[in-house]
Amino acid sequence: MIPLSHEHHDALLLAWRLRTGDLSKREPELRAKHVSAFFEYRLVNHLKLEEELLFPAFRAVLGVEASLIDVLLSDHRELRAKAAAIKAGAYNQVDSLCDLLERHIRTEERQLFVLAEKRMKPTEMAELGQQIKAQLSWRTPNLERTGISRTNCRRG
Ligand SMILES: [Fe+2]
Ligand SMILES: [Fe+2]
Image (tube, rainbow, N blue to C red; front, side, top):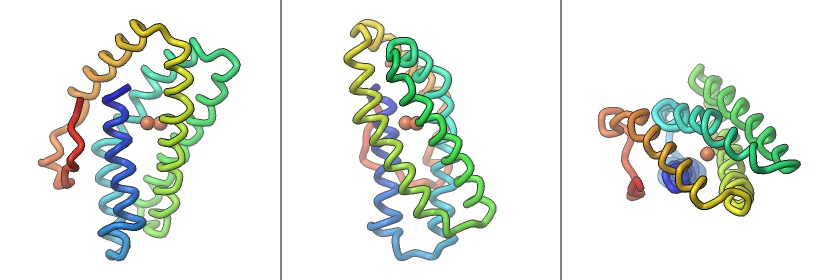
């Protein structure tokens, strides 16, 4: 799940910058612009990919614990709604989107990925990882053109 974890890292970094770091004291409109750009160029694809590839594959092996995926899907809906509201001018929702994003990513990394790794065969996991990597590389646009500053996180 390395390619998705790189995206999680970038999202957590942006959330940190907005709440604690260099963007925390900036104008609400600028903070909202960072959220909207990141959502549009990175998260839209990320959420879609999880919904189309990752969650169905994990659901098949999780059994009763698949209810975790329903919680994560409901987070996705909430994230989209908050991002749409922010884009429409609800700048005061930036912090709550950051909270939700952090909580959501930690659940995926610490619960979902850990569980799936226990239940899936290593070959299945590797194949899924390859599919995700291939999809991410053609779906993600060139960030330099979008004006979003790149982080140090290297894509795997
Ligand atoms: Fe997700
Ligand atoms: Fe994710």
